[in-house]
Image (cartoon, rainbow, N blue to C red; front, side, top):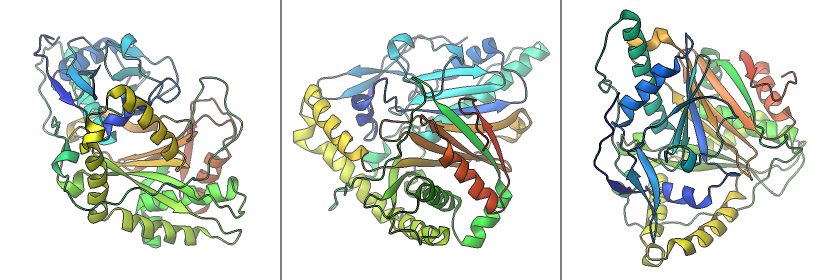
Length: 428
């Protein structure tokens, strides 16, 4: 087991992270989950040992949240994180007081290792980096135990430990444009019973999906976003005209654009909008609209503008020296206004690669996003080997959007297999 005697360090939250502690409570967790399913049942004692060994390497995760006079900040957490058997629905609020002050949660269920993270400490790419390292060393320890050997764990050759604030590094003092915030169409309906979350996974043949996207001349993210909008237009709007646009939040990983390897948050959000003019819209038309918007929104110049606007606001003296208690009130008001501008989120982690020596031990990866008050359904996407997984989390009782989404893919000639957590048992 690792020695927990460490020097106490502190550091600032990154630009994106500063908002999350202010708006988070039990009804808005800002928690997401990445999971790895292995070929054999999880041994909790070995998983606990692996977690204790690797957590000290990750300064970005080995922290607790402290409240300052002007902002929250992170401080080294000298306590020991605890592995638990999964006993509740995914992406629930992480209460530091009952979690050894940590802002993440590691659990297991049968063959699956779950890593749930409060968004203030990292984004999906940073979390996946940690999960892969935890999984590698769990496998190493288990095999060593089976051989009757003891091993010394070291970071793997693709482990990333960088905690650079890439927002600040790439900030340029240039003219910036404020966000335009319009009210978006909202998904409403009967809710599931209290504290219940539906999770529906669709496992998609990746080669078939790639061929379909190639025939349309678009990326996987563009295509899936288009299908999602098409299904909302059909199932919720009933193909009617509506003054509120369907607005899909699509997080963009900024690391490739700005040569960053940080494990802290480093993403921007592209809002893809579709205005329904009535009953004549086609999927092909929506694909063109989505593709053109995404091309504009993910241009490096546009992303630099986004970073500039966000960081420049943080640097304003009026904001910097406003006491945190007052920031609470201001940021809550801003968030409530901004949150009305989104229908739902589709986040694609992309293809997940693992070191070759671990491929035979890992069956699959999963990505689940916690819902919010204004976004009662969210969609996480990831791929591993020849399979792409689309995971819907929802607190809406009727699954007709999820059903329409997967049936649309099937009609497009793409093979889909469905799995759920059993909260909704209707046929997909």
